[in-house]
Image 1 (cartoon, each protein chain N blue to C red):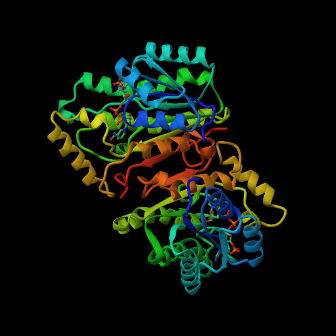
Image 2 (image 1 turned 120 degrees about the vertical axis):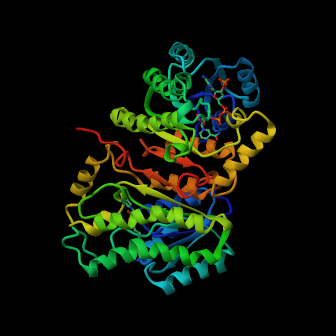
Image 3 (image 1 turned 60 degrees about the vertical axis):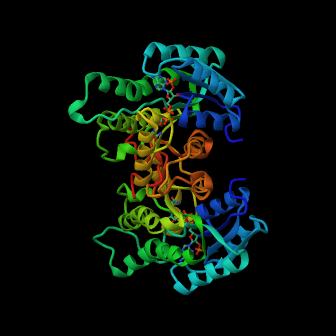
Length: 255
Length: 248
Ligand SMILES: NC(=O)c1ccc[n+]([C@@H]2O[C@H](COP(=O)([O-])OP(=O)(O)OC[C@H]3O[C@@H](n4cnc5c(N)ncnc54)[C@H](OP(=O)(O)O)[C@@H]3O)[C@@H](O)[C@H]2O)c1
Ligand SMILES: NC(=O)c1ccc[n+]([C@@H]2O[C@H](COP(=O)([O-])OP(=O)(O)OC[C@H]3O[C@@H](n4cnc5c(N)ncnc54)[C@H](OP(=O)(O)O)[C@@H]3O)[C@@H](O)[C@H]2O)c1
């Protein structure tokens, strides 16, 4: 068990990739917290994780909520070793689209969730984190390639790569490592959140066209990389990005 | 055990990073074939690795030797699940002093060798197979006196991208592993005295944001991740194990 006795906070641990990470962390012996806004999925996810995990209902775009998450985690477990900043993707009621269309209101919603919340998740976790801890941010292949309607989101995810480097430098003395895992399309409920009902399968199919391996990814694919980066196995790895993307960023397969 | 019953071939599995990968693969349940040039080093490696290991004396820069390695593996197992191209050396030479001999030896072992090793092993590999080329974080950096070395390592970066694109129908993955500085024989070979070695190791350690050299086990852990099905959605990419030297 590679995460025995580690305490982890996983934002968005109640759905999709985050839940996949939480399950894998549990199997590897970790304890910790899943964070999300929806009580129902927090409860149903927790039911599959066993007693070593708790759920905290919180909005990662809200500063007081973040304060509460880390304070409560520390009170309950006495330490924090790993933070997985995973909550993100489709922000509630945020329109996605071209730079020609997206105005300030939608810009703020997308960036509050995908950029600002990651910064403050980390900023507020640090006082409670152990020296030698590990932070994993979930990026996206959209940081590297143009994807329809995802330019703003891609910019937010690209910033995380710079932060992995900069934050690792900032926290060198405390030996806290920061890295990014960047997935391509992963089969999660996210698509139901921004795609017209009835179009979900078609959109997934279209995205798979851009994945050289010819399949959509699974949350477990991402979770395995996060376990590696979260555990001490990656103790010499910092400021890097691991692409879990079926080759979508690096390969140009001509059909 | 994360590599149970997998068959792995590791070039340069007798020293440093390659030896650490070999040991760890066996611990994870793999059956391995290692090769290198020195008989005594091969014998010693077999002793320290224990378990299911076959050593083959071969030069990874010579195509005939690579044929021999492939034959041995084919006859013994008929298949390969994991290929790690790791054999390498470093000679620091400024551009104006580079000889054709230095250039050829560098590219023969660290670009030509990996390409033909992969070509020869490919018929033994099947869906789920994983190819790992050991490059260097140096392929991202401009470090004086490493033209040929860093150039060959950069070629490997391109190889895995290109091969991954070619392989996409057959389920075989190709990825890079890029280590930062590790205190192995590769550093010893660049120093004439123990004082020089000490100075070189200090120089590199100070260069690394973590202010230390890597431990070979840290490179081996990343190799296990890339070798196993844990990275089954990864191809054409690079895992950098460098204490931040190339990016921070
Ligand atoms: N799926 C993909 O194809 C894909 C590809 C590349 C990158 N990613 C990235 O992977 C991460 C996870 O995405 P996913 O596909 O697993 O999506 P998902 O199934 O929609 O899950 C998103 C998670 O984030 C939580 N969340 C969203 N807004 C939140 C907020 N304001 N406060 C707290 N929690 C919030 C959600 O819980 P509540 O709704 O209950 O709050 C949910 O648990 C995201 O960062 C996404 O950008 C996904
Ligand atoms: N150590 C570092 O700081 C560092 C940093 C970045 C990348 N790397 C890369 O990591 C890999 C391993 O390096 P290391 O540090 O572990 O070096 P090492 O301790 O010197 O080991 C090199 C291995 O390669 C074998 N080898 C050398 N030339 C060979 C040839 N012509 N044919 C077959 N095998 C040969 C050696 O065995 P024989 O001599 O018996 O043939 C030995 O087993 C290399 O590709 C290197 O470029 C190392």
